[in-house]
Amino acid sequence: MTPAEWTTAEIELLTRLWKEGLTAGSIAKQFPARSRNAIIGKAHRLCLPGRVSPIKVGDKPIHTKQSWAVDRCRWIEDDPLINPTFCGRHTKGGPWCDEHRAIVFKSSEEQAA
Ligand SMILES: [Zn+2]
Image 1 (tube, rainbow, N blue to C red):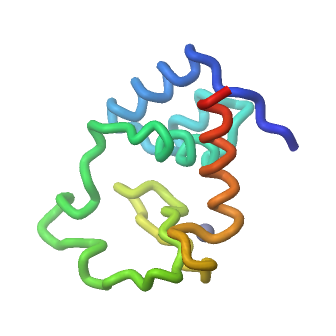
Image 2 (cartoon, rainbow, N blue to C red):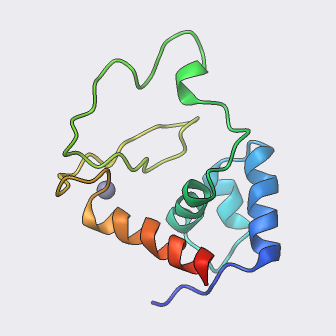
Image 3 (cartoon, rainbow, N blue to C red):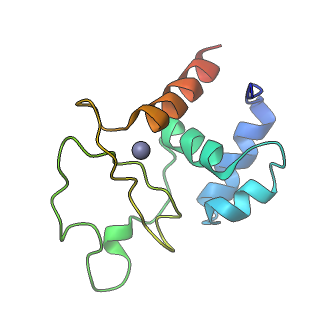
């Protein structure tokens, strides 16, 4: 499956919905041709601001309890606000496992194209 390039209009829509605080799943519904992982990957690459950090939600820190091992994938599988779940697979030294690094780098190439 070859993902189509992100158009400027799509990036604008993604940015807007993301800043409005929609979940990745909800945003994905606006992009029938893209998976939720693709949405999250693109948002990661765009370093989209305006998203409340999961650490600041509620009174209890969610992520800070555990210190994350450097050889574990930091990819957040689900929406960080609703159900933050890290991939946690072993990596070869980077922050992501092979699968998720591929997603991040693919988005990067799309952005550069
Ligand atoms: Zn992973």
